[in-house]
Image (cartoon, rainbow, N blue to C red):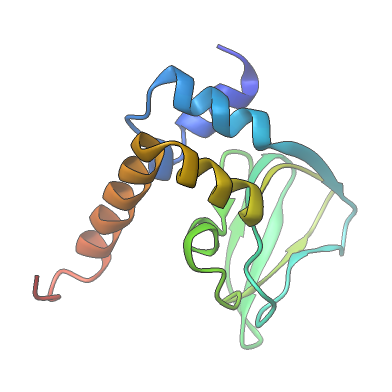
Length: 138
């Protein structure tokens, strides 16, 4: 399995998707490099992409408070793929970061064309909501 496909399969948002669906998402992805101190995303900016860190480390800061550090295999922006809402935190490279990026506009076209991808994404997001907000009423 190509590295891109392995990375995508490691993301809960894409769990259970067919090889064809993963390949379609992989076709949309491109690699980006961030130098130390570059911002991968900035809190409050439009959520226009999804990123998976291939190598390197980055710091997540929300309202001036450091929340955690990200490394290879970590990802951010999965909600942005769906709603394009504002980023909830700033993520800054603490060393050279290579990341796989999927732009929201490309992903939207994909889910419009492939109902199976749309279904898997919605299922993964609802599972995340149930996990993180167990008191939610359905």
